[in-house]
Amino acid sequence: MTLGTPNTYIELLTNFPPRPITAESELLATQKVIDSLIDKSELTPDEQDYLNVLGTLVYEYEERHKLIPDIYGVELLKVLIDEFSLRQKDLVSIFKTEFIVSEVLSGQQNLTVKQIQELANFFHISPAAFFESK
Image (cartoon, rainbow, N blue to C red):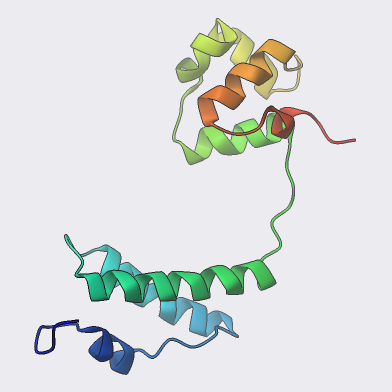
């Protein structure tokens, strides 16, 4: 750590001391500090360390307080399409036509084993995530 430079680790700790997050308001305040750091073009090593600490606190809070439902199959595919801002035509290499993509997304056609494997490769996740849970 170099003293005298802006945003040294001690200054960062003094301006917004990291503490375990126990409420939504604390989460929002922490996220605001994280956002301000992420918006910078380049972080100092001290800022990067501080960002890592804040990120860990947010992660721990979300693990305790956010219930994310398990989703599988076509519902997962819909979320991934939205998350990656994809269009149906972006998946033609897997499904062969936009019509088939549309049929699968509407529930009129089931995913095939081959499509599941290709989707898993495309999104870099386990094929098991695309099998419907019963």
